Length: 93
Image 1 (cartoon, helix red, strand yellow):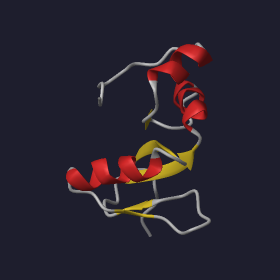
Image 2: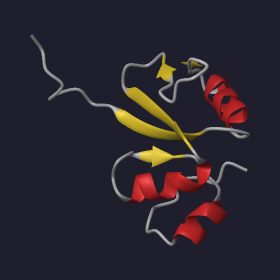
Image 3: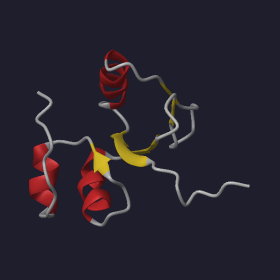
Image 4: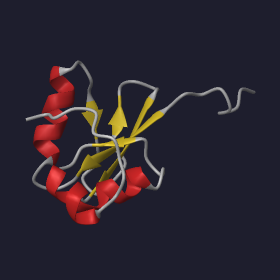
């Protein structure tokens, strides 16, 4: 039985609510499919090396800064307001 020790997974914070649809479309344009149940906060990617969590955009900087999630998509305003130390990888707009 193979454990999760060697499993490399990127944990992604995805914004729920008004930004959810546009975020999913962006991933689709990049070649990824994301599915999520109507009442679920755990989307499924078609790539076994990706895991996601749907959370409020204003909470994403905290989860990433604390190391609970590896990366996240959120607004710069939430990063500034939360006052956390994170690395901006790319400006998507």
